Structure formats: structure tokens, C-alpha cells
Image (cartoon, rainbow, N blue to C red; front, side, top):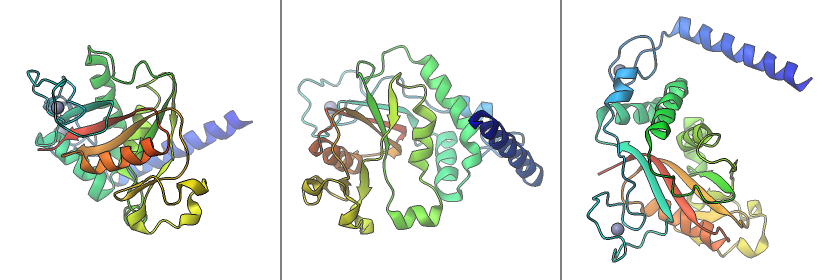
Length: 245
Ligand SMILES: [Zn+2]
Ligand SMILES: [Zn+2]
């Protein structure tokens, strides 16, 4: 029965997508070429980052000595795919964030599949027995305005393929949005585990992968990571589409 419903839902989604495509033929977010939301040429033109940044300071220089690094970021590992200064990636992230073009999701999925296939080193979280995938939350008012959280879209795309035992995590909120304390399940967390703008909503006992679109200094995602660590996360990793300057 559920497969009938699934199939019907899928057929409806396909019909809606092609109807939408008829009204608004896809054109590449980066170069404007018609035929897709992010064309293959532009996907391939992204200046990729193949060496993972230092999880304590985000430096990607291979000569950087991580054992003596003075950085204070709390991550157990960081993966970024490309440079934000690369126009094809910047334009696609801009489309996701400001124009709400969720249609680019299919092309973004192809890009992420290629990044994963071309990666030679193991992912920093590969050895974790279980991994919660937590999008960096937006302030509630901003998510209402935008209609979606672009980090959640990226998290949905990587969850099925970037770890064998990944599950969706929904353990964080931004308190700048006035999160009612009543939303926090565990009473002992109501005043504890608040770091910067973030609060952990429940206890966690496994590793968590935070997902964001762009990471620059890492200070925002570090606050989110500290809130999760305060609530029991064993380790927190960070994945971002782009590394800003
Ligand atoms: Zn293009
Ligand atoms: Zn470092």
C-alpha cells in the first residue's frame, strides 16, 4: 500500500517538475546556459578542495603542522568541497540561499556524487559506528521567510551516501529566534548547553556531522558544535559545500 502511495507521490512530483520546467525552462545558475539548473561545465569548473582543512583552524596548506596548531575550533574533522570564490559554486549557493531555487537539488546531487567518487582519502567520520547528520539551523523567522533551510537541503543530499549508518539529526535550534524553552525536551538542558546562538534540544550519545553551505572562520558552526558536545555528542564533524576567504 505504501509503495502505491510512494509511486503516486513520485509520479505527482515528476508531473509537477515537468510542468514547472515547461513554464520556466531550466537555465544554469552560474552561466545561464539553458537545459539544467547547474550545467555540467560549471559543475566541473568549481575549484575543488581535495585536502581536508585543519579541523582546529581551517587552514588547508599541507605544510601546516596540525599537532602544534593553536586553533580552537572544536571539530574532529572538516570536509569542504570547493572555494566560495569560485564563481560556479558561489552562484549556485546564492541561488539556493536567496532565490530559493530548490530545483538545483538534482544537479547539486550529481556534483556531490562526483566529489565523493573522486575522493581518495577516507572521510574523517568513516570509522564512526553511527552518525547524526545535523543541518546548521537558521533562525526560525529567516527560515519562514525563505521557506526552507539550504543547509537542510545539502544534509538531505549527503545523508544516504556519505556514511553507511547516517541518520537525520534534529537536536539544535538557534535561540536568537526566541526558541521557547518549552521546546527543549530535557529540563537539564534548558539553561546548560547554550553556546552563542545555539542550544542543544536533547541529549546525544553519538557522533554528529554538522552541515552548512559556506564556512568562513568556522565560529558560527563552532558554537553549534560546542552546544552538541555539551549535550553529549561524542565528536562533531563539519561538512560545508564551500570554504570562504
Ligand atoms: Zn553553467
Ligand atoms: Zn590548524
